[in-house]
Length: 196
Image (tube, rainbow, N blue to C red; front, side, top):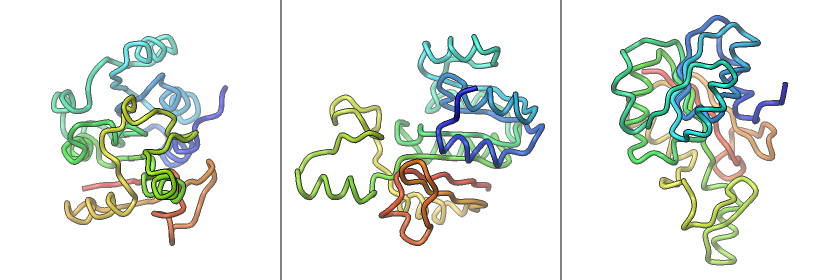
């Protein structure tokens, strides 16, 4: 079995065995398959890309094609233990509304995203005056699916303004854990576990 992306590994390690999960923006279903195979999790997925939907279904997963911005209203409240949104928040049209829906559907929600305040991005903007193209953000500004550039501090402010509770925070740089203290500057990715 292939290794999970580092943010997905954190999520997989923190989902309770036997839980019910909705993975929004599930890609090819790698996380869902790992949760099913390792922890007996009952997982469902929602994915925009039809090629990814097909790949997930080929793995024997329950995945439907849909859009996080418009289709989450169809899910019942408190219908899963965990709603997951990994590396998808920044591609949604209304991230705050998508998060509200996740926290309505799931008792808890995992959210992971690239930190657009990472020092390499800041340095690239400062020295080159252009939107950076990096290993983790490989698309040019005109071809990127990222429409909201969120930082860790921005996300923490949103959590506070909405009155949500943060049950966990994990920060990654180079795929490895990094300290919380200066995460907004040093972390390339963030993973949060939230609840209402």
